[in-house]
Amino acid sequence: MVFDKIRKVYGEYPRDFWVIMCTLFVDHMGSALIFPFLALFISAKFGVGMWEIGQLFLIVAMATMAGSMMGGALTDKLGRKAVMIFGLVVSAFSMLGLGLVSDLSAVYMIGLIVGLFANVGGPAREAMIADLLPEHKRADGFGLSRVLMNLTVVIGPALGGLVAVTYGYLWLFIIDAITSTTTAMVVSLIIPETKPTISDKPKESIVQTLGGYLKVATDKIFIAFVLVSVLVIAVYVQMNTSLGLYLRDSHGISDQGFGYILTLNAAMVVAFQFWITRRIKNTPPMLIMALGTVFVGAGFLMYGLVSTYLLFLAAMAIITVGEMLFAPVSQALVAHLAPEHMRGRYMAMFGFAWTIPTGFAPLAAGYITSSLGSQWVWYICGLVSIAAIAGYLILHVRMKTELQISVQEDKTITEPITVALPEIAREEKSI
Image 1 (cartoon, rainbow, N blue to C red):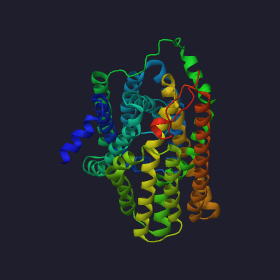
Image 2 (cartoon, one colour; image 1 turned 60 degrees about the vertical axis):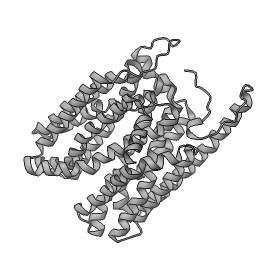
Image 3 (cartoon, rainbow, N blue to C red; image 1 turned 120 degrees about the vertical axis):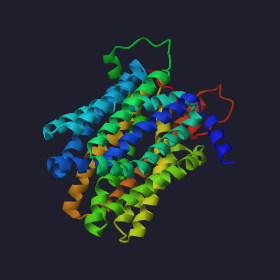
Image 4 (spheres, one colour; image 1 turned 90 degrees about the horizontal axis):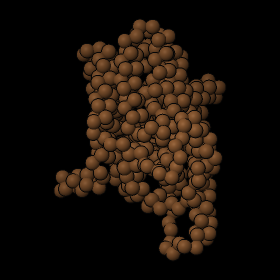
């Protein structure tokens, strides 16, 4: 019975999609081995504190914004495959270099390289998934990718800790370089180029391709969606930045105890993401985004109101439900809103909704903690979530209004149109 279900799910997607999923798993496993211990490695090797480590993460986040823009433009200009391979190779050598350097200034320089070049393949991979899947399967496809990534989060830290204790931190960087290089080879040899061919579009110079971001910026619905998403993501990223420190300093939760809370998050995604995604795919996407934000905001607000470990676990479970609603639908919605020949740039622009909060939300949390007290971080998370919920609901109404206008103006439409994610009717942008 189980194997029949597995075969059925496998048959619903093309072979190249599954190859991408396998390479994603291998590459992300290497990252999952090392990133939970990166701060510990830098602190131990160079004798620095969280201020210096925070500076490194801010450098990486800011450089990632530029690298993502470049990756999105190159994805639309050169194709998905070449950009993915380039990003994987640079990631392999830069992370290996990070493990070998002995000077803190060199760590900052490599962090800049990691941000600029190692992440250029992100928009290409997401655009390739969108290319390979029909619109009604994209939310499921992105949901599957999240299941695999979270599976590596369940497995990776435990293996990484074992490797670090047994062989030393350097081997984590070596393994990460091996996984990235192996993934690049598989992409090069097996996965075909998926960039759509549009014969009636004149060829663009690289300057024109980069200039396409100005045209992305004129898509009012998309930009509003990105800005609203920044709010909820600024709340969500507190999970991997401020939450562990708060639980340790205010409630005496050990690092191991916090690790169990994060493991619950990843395990729930692995167990339930695909099941949830399949049951919401015919619901209007902005309503799903609003509902997901309700759960995310409620969970983080709980951390300011409760004080027992069991309730901390319950709060994380609530957050994870919101994450499983929010994340795959947001990626599928971006793929829908983007014209085919600009899909990489749209994916890169939406990536800003993650990199901006990752760089600045922890600093904001630190300021709130020092000014108002640590509990106010979670109260404000609740307020910010309410603002995001209102934003998604407004966008839902706006998209329904545009749909009604489109149906009225197009006299050739003879069948009803729904606003569900696979069927959103939206006027094609002329670019």
